[in-house]
Each structure stands twice: as C-alpha cells, then as structure tokens.
Length: 111
Length: 114
Image (tube, rainbow over all chains, first blue to last red; front, top):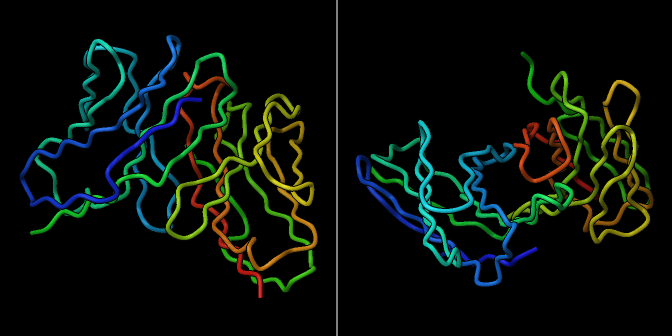
C-alpha cells in the first residue's frame, strides 16, 4: 500500500474553507484515495473517496490532480464541530480492506 | 438501524491476563476488521474477517487472535497482556472486503493494562 504524508496539524477559524493536502507519491494505478474523520474517543468516520479529478458530497470535496501523486480534502465553511483528526488513506481495490492509517492531520477550528 | 456496537466500553486488566473484546457489525455487513489505536497515533490494522474466514492480518504478535461467528459478530482475544497493549480497540464492519467498500467504525473498547 502506498505511503501517505499529511501535515501534522492545521488551525482555522469558523466559516473559513479548509484544505488539507495529502502526498502519495507511490500511488499505484488501481489505488483509491479515501479520507476519514475522527473525533476524540470515537471511531473514524468515512468522509469521501475518489480515484481522479474531483469528487463532491454533502460534507466535502476531494481534488485529485492528473498525476494522482497528491490529493486535497476541502471542507467548506468549517465550524467548531469540525475540529478533529483527518486521515488520508490510499489503497488498492484488489487489497483486502486493511486500511493503513498514518498519524493524520489534527484540525483545530477556532471561534 | 444500529451502528457497529462493541463491548465492553472500558476494561482494566493486569499484565499477564487475557482479554476478549466483542463486536457486532451493522446488519447485513459480512466483513469485520479490528484496529488498535494508541493515544496520539492513527489506528493500526490487526485483523480482517469476511464470511467467517481470516482475510488479512496486520503486524501483531500471536498473542492476538480473533474469530467471526455465523452471525458475523466477532471477538478479538489478547493473551499475556503487556502494558503496551493499553489502547483503544476499534472494530469496523463493511459490506464487502475491498477498499471500495466504506468501513463503519464502532465506538471502541478502551483497554487499560496495569
């Protein structure tokens, strides 16, 4: 499975758009990119998954450039409740679902 | 619909003891995975079971074992507990086995080894 690199922490203010970038230089042709959110003392929660270009759902957007060596999770108009750890994972559809979490990015939203 | 449930919520054990953690997946989900999360780190994959068979194993010692029952619930067993086994143990269920299937995590079991 490809290794990912994310910033350790980020700060933002309520109402701002937050972009968290993940590097995955060794991503393989069949790999998908998945983002999870985790609050303290809770299990991770799926946010979004994509393969290429742009994916958008009700909570976030995922931007993937043509070379797929990085991806950016975009959270529009964050609120205090978006304070959490965000994990970027890269894996192959052919693998079993043994997701390899890194340390994640700790996002702190301030009032 | 109920989400993934885990029991117990919290557990305190002493070194050398063994522990059994339990997980009930979302109804209809046939895959269950176990993760260990040490404070300040991301979850680390331990096992995945699908249709009652082990389909994946992470880099954990043989003290860790698991099984899945006909109703797709699962148990994680840890023998000869060490202080370093203190962690949040997470269970996740999904419809299928590959990465394409979203995993749903339970609230976890907080294990403290003294």
